[in-house]
Image 1 (cartoon, rainbow, N blue to C red):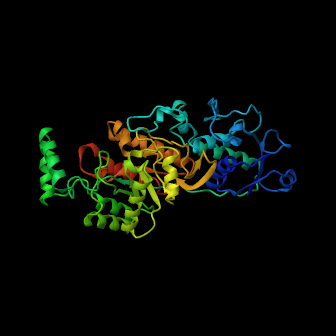
Image 2 (tube, rainbow, N blue to C red):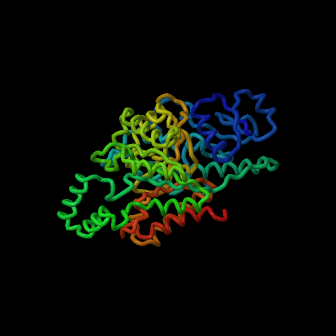
Image 3 (spheres, helix red, strand yellow):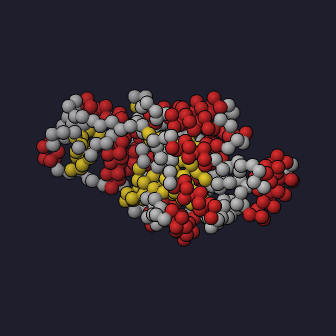
Length: 433
């Protein structure tokens, strides 16, 4: 256990320290405001306050860690031994930055509460973030800071035996619609036929009716392939099925159709299954509750995980609704158009409600690459190099790599050519670790 001396124990302080020590470094952490208890502690310890007590490991705190609500925070990003960092302490000690306040800033998504420009779907974009503007979006900077701190502890406490976590992968399979043509009903296929004709998409029209007549496999029905890969992998895939009502944004399958229900149940026999919340469930807790109840009725168990449609988040309301409905995990945190680490970490963390100044029970797992994002690279080689680079960054801190693929990603459609190979790169990255 590491003991931290501080003049005041705040919720923000506990939140940041527990992420770095408990979740990343796997060291239990405790806090004290009593100097005598700190002096008597004969194992790992450090002080986090305004002035050092003696020659202990000391970090001068930034005022944000004790504040409440939002303030206009001045952030200047500098280089620290090969990594970016901010909240310079002007202290000449071992740690010249308050990495704990910086961790709190990134994990709480403080910047997403501040005024910013949204995209056409109302999403917070990477370009608005401090990580993108200062060129550290591509690295799990919080985990890097934690490992830097670990090196300092190892030097000061050479007899302490540190545990080492293992690199792992958690593949996400997003299913906005399980089929391209099947189970869509007469009116939707009729409309699709007219659209194919008006757009001169004769190959798609041909495929549509070959599938509807049972003469060809539906191109988006790739579940047999995915489950075969699941059976060969030690890591559980996590599927998110859309079962919300048909709308302008969500054009899935009617959740009442027996074949769709059977598919979800079949997938749940081998993998974890969560809810892909519809676009309109994002801001309407009643719609979200209806979709949660639907999924629980299908799975015959409590729903644990969710992911928002279009990877859209409205903080803090999106997460508060999940907390209110006792959904314990969310996998929406990430950027649609950029590879990287939206919250600065490749370690799951908990949603901190800045309005109420509390850590909630909602565990956030951010994703690091979306299949769609890789389409900006023309060649398969470029796609693979981008994927390998982000995997390498996660491996360097023994983190958890979370990619998002869709069921249609594994189809034979030209646009997704080579993506099965990319998926294999992800799964094989954990071999021989």
